[in-house]
Image (tube, rainbow, N blue to C red; front, side, top):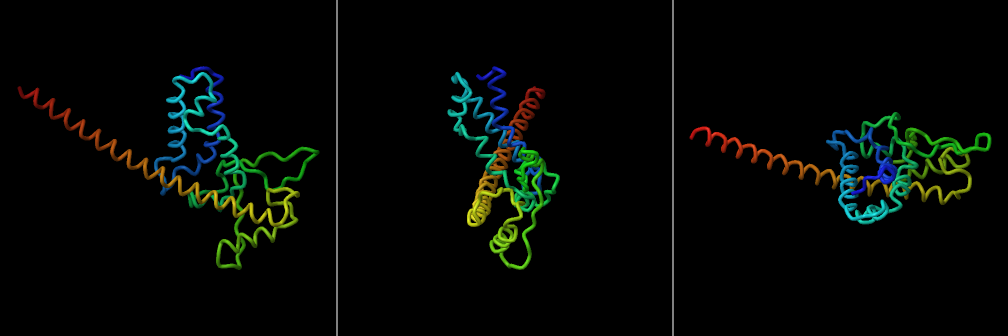
Length: 212
C-alpha cells in the first residue's frame, strides 16, 4: 500500500480539483453528494491498485487514472459560469467556490491576474429563441472587450468554437454524472436490503435460541 507522505500528497494534489464542485454537490437531483462519491471511488481504486505498486504513478496507471488527470479536470472547469453550472444544480449561486480563469486577463504590473475563486455569472443575451444563437450573440457582442477569459491572441472563430466545445464537454460530463449517481443509488438500495435481511435473520436466530 502507499503509505509515504510524499505519495499521499501526490494523490491529494491530483484529486483536490474535485473539491471544486463541493458547493454544487448536494442538490435535489443528486443525493448524496456525487463529488464525495467520485473522490471515494477514485481513491479506493488507487489504493487497491497500489498494493504492489512502488511509485504513485504506477498506482494511478494501474487504477486507470490518467497521468493528466489534474490537467483534464482543470480544462473542464476553467471557463465555467454560474449559468453553465445550473445544468448540474439549478440552485447554484455566484458563491460557488469553483475556481476559474478570470474573464479579464489584462496584466497588472506585468503579472497575470489571480484565478477567480468562484465561477462568475455571465447570462446569455436575450433576442434569440435558442441557446445556440444566444451563445453566438454573446461571443460576438464581447469581441474586443477583453472580458471573455481568452485574452487577445484568439481569433473570432476560435472564440466561437471554444464556447461550443466547452458546452459539449459539460453536457457529456453531466450525462456521465447521471449514470454514476444512478448506479450509486442502485448499489445503496441493494446494500440496505442486504443489511435489513441480515438484521432480520440475526433477530430471528436470537429469538430462537432465547426460546430454548
